[in-house]
Every structure is written in structure tokens, then in C-alpha cells.
Image (cartoon, rainbow, N blue to C red):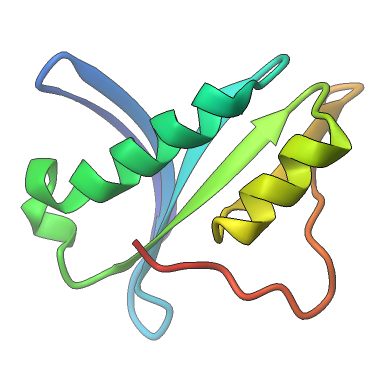
Length: 107
């Protein structure tokens, strides 16, 4: 089963995509118009707490995606070093912006 998750629990809203079966992964999105350094801290904190708040998904691999309309090259590189996927949003199009060979971190 593949589908979107829209969690509202503990006064926290999370947007994620998940896949079950052979894939068994969750992708948590943080969408920002103009992300800053604290955006990376924010999504990493959320990813670190995800299984505590949603134990029904403890068997899934959890990954983070920082999606932005405008992201600096420096911040993009930092997010990638931290193991986060990076995506760009432009003209109502969501496009992954990760280099070939990128290895995401499972949180």
C-alpha cells in the first residue's frame, strides 16, 4: 500500500508519504519557501521523534525531505551532508534535487 499520511497528533502536524510491503519506508516532508539553518534542525528533530509519536510505523525506514522554493547552495549541501533529501518547488512542480549516488540517512 502506498499513500499520503497527514498526521495531527500531540499538537503536531506532519506530512509524509509511506510505502508498505517490500518498500516499507516513510518519507517526512518539511516544506519551506526560504529555508534557513534552523529548518534542518527542525526536520531532524521531527525525524528523531517520529517513532515515539507514531509507534505503529516503528518497522519502517524513516527519511527526511527538505523541500524549498528557494534554497541556497550552501544550505542544500548541508542538508545533503546531514542525510536529507532535497527537493525544489517551482511552477507548482515538485522536483527532487539530490545528486547521483546520494545515500540518505535513515532516522
